[in-house]
Amino acid sequence: MAELGKRNRLPILREATPGLFLDGGDRGEILLPRRYAPARAMAGDILDVFVYRDSEDRLVATTETPHAMVGDFAFLKVVSWDRNMGAFLDWGLSKDLLLPRREQASSIRPGDWVVVHISLDEKSDRIVASARINRALDRTPPDYPPDHPVSLLIAEESPLGYNAIVDNAYRGLLYRAETGAALKIGQRLGGFVRAVRPNGRLDLVLDRSGFQRIAPLTEKIIDALRAKGGRLPYHDKTAPGEIRDAFGVSKKAFKQAVGTLYRKRVIELAPDGIHLVSPPRK
Image (cartoon, rainbow, N blue to C red):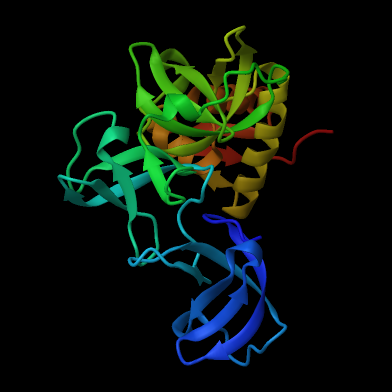
């Protein structure tokens, strides 16, 4: 059976004026409008499509890819508002995604951006968004060892730092002292687990600890130096965000790696940045 709000591989049953009709199993035939139909597609071909409901509440398919699917957390823009229904979000498809009034965590208006969880409403069988994200997070403590790499979506700022959604499932905290630079709500980045608390929440860091962090970073810096003719414009006054954009680490971690390379006489420090003076020693 075709899964609503997910990508599906569905066979073509027949062609008609509106487009291609696909086999949705127990959901019946699902129309793929002609504007999305691949050229020379024919009955029996298998198509990779996303299934959702159109403005008339009919099941339809599209070859387009939404910004997020059922089960995902996402950072989406509010494009319109209906005082009876709620807000409508741009999720990359022709029909906007409904964020019902009851599922809003705070007052929002068109132009705002909001972190939401996307689900399939069991009663209406419609795809909806919810800004009450805590209800969708898994509270079971995950079996993550220290320094385990994870993907993060920054959900909100807190007095201690930033609450993040971890691996599209768990709640974690990045302490402000560990970030090195301000983060943005909705920002996606990689991080690492420092500790798993009994309540299932995770303490997070953006950089690996100790040698596990520095050794790979020194190689990355050397590769970047070679690619740029032996010079990079990063120094003490470089903004932390610029370093994170370039290397995906904090300025503190970058300086530790640079210090390691300097002590090994692989690089030299200059007012305009760092210079490669010799190949790294084995």
